[in-house]
Every structure is written in structure tokens, then in C-alpha cells.
Figure 1 (cartoon, rainbow, N blue to C red):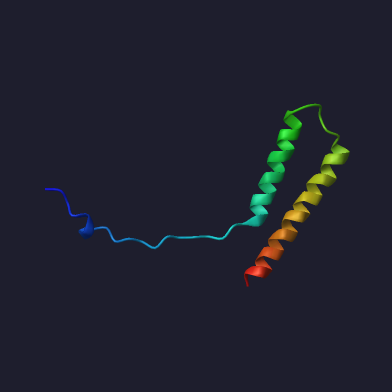
Figure 2 (figure 1 turned 90 degrees about the horizontal axis):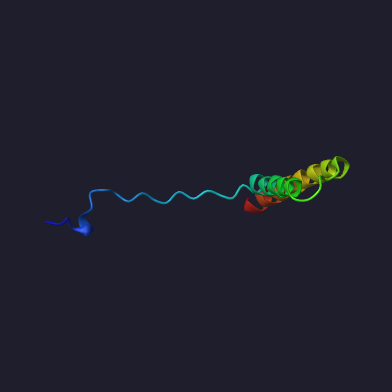
Length: 72
């Protein structure tokens, strides 16, 4: 006989949900974008890319702080 689906022996667990880590998401997108930039075309100048990296990480941190403040 087939087991009755309504009397399943496994208890259903509540779904675990976590909030988005905006710092991780934006930093990852920044590094992926910079990696794609280095792989395609001529090598970009480090004088331009270093401030872009620092500015991008600063922007990601700013968004993460705003998101944390809004959540409360």
C-alpha cells in the first residue's frame, strides 16, 4: 500500500529566511565587474581602478548602513 500523504511522519519545519547582506552583494558585484573589465579589452590603468575600488566599497558600506538603519 502507498503511504497516505496526509499522515506524513516528517514534521514540517518553518522556512528559514535571512535578510540580504547588501555589503556582500554589492562588493561581489563590484569585484565581478572589475574582473570582467580586466578580462576584456586593454588593461585599465591602476590609477583609475584603485579609487574606483575604494569608492565602490565605500558606496556598498553606505548602502549597508542605510539598510540596517531602515530595518530597525
